[in-house]
Image (cartoon, rainbow, N blue to C red; front, side):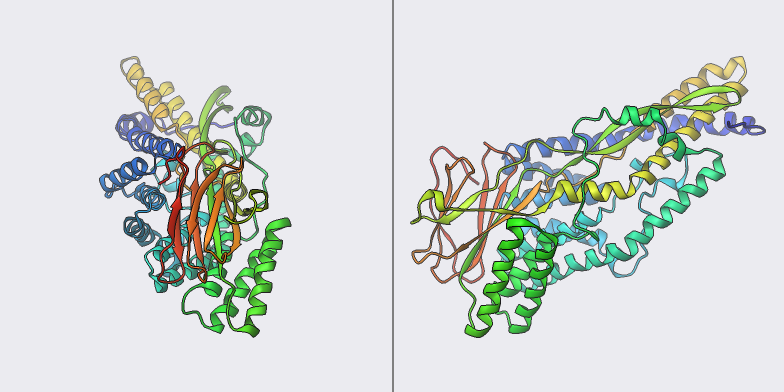
Length: 501
């Protein structure tokens, strides 16, 4: 039970105007972000990549001074431009996003994981968004693809290395930051005399939380903040890319081996086959010409909100505390892997793409690691506001009680919002199919239902990447080719029923 004494005059005189001012200031920022994110995600998920890129670009420019949210806007603009094959724009937005997070890799100490406790009177929506470990890894990984498309090989090499540096950083400083945030949260609970951890550990919280639609929880990631696709891409680039040396290929082999160790089943077998080809090439001196079809399928899970009311006893009175909490929700339906193979082969012999990164697993496992801290802080923040509201109403005279009650109500409503910021245009899965370059250079991509997605003609001696973005089944896909040499891939035909980008 919580008993408060001696703070009533302060609460009434100081917190009331603060409540009113904050109630007017806070709703816009989170509300605008939610509307912006939803609009871009809807355009992107329907395959309207040009419109999504235009919208995301305009928002990122318009919000360039929004210190709290500008990173997430730049990430969305970068990926949307990439899906629309606007490579220079994509590179520029990725570089702008990297500019905001790079200091935390180079020199500056990592901020607290949640940053919510600048004061217990606000919540996480007021913090500066700094991206999750996976988002930082994918920032550099996807930026490397745009650099490859522009034949900026040295830049691609740097960005692929940076993606691994982000993984190494997450194992050390990010994990330490989680421990520090947990200690700070425990200290705040002691200071305020509120056992928020017990409140969210009770039956009331569990019952409400169990009703969340599309909830993702308890999924196992790939360990130590690792992303197998990032390792695979660097390994493939170093082994098949232009002007690579044998030391490069040795490093590439190590990356491929690390990716294979994280995966199971057909995905592991496929990478092990790629390693065997690399080992055989060390004697022959040349890598076999291969095109790797990289399918960015579906859309990554996103943060959704539930509001839960919990009981808090204050001075022999039971006060109800309502707090908003984020959770991870699946987005849409899974998209089936594409099939790829030479045009000359029978359709049934096409090779299926295998999943090299499952973002349901990665995103939800990362969130599970910090959600206890986030939930405790949000509960504590909501409880402090409820206690302040209760104290004001108890201390106010008849002339001011109505105003104070209204101010407290406005404040609690306006600040009762979960932080839903996340990179929405990331894929749900990254799938890869390896196709030995056919003698006639003709490669066919098929959807899971057997319909032709795209036919390409490439140099019979070339290797490269085919980047396929398919946010949902039945919508237009973006298909682009990235040769690992100077020769461009030539489109042969596109089915009349499909409007590809």
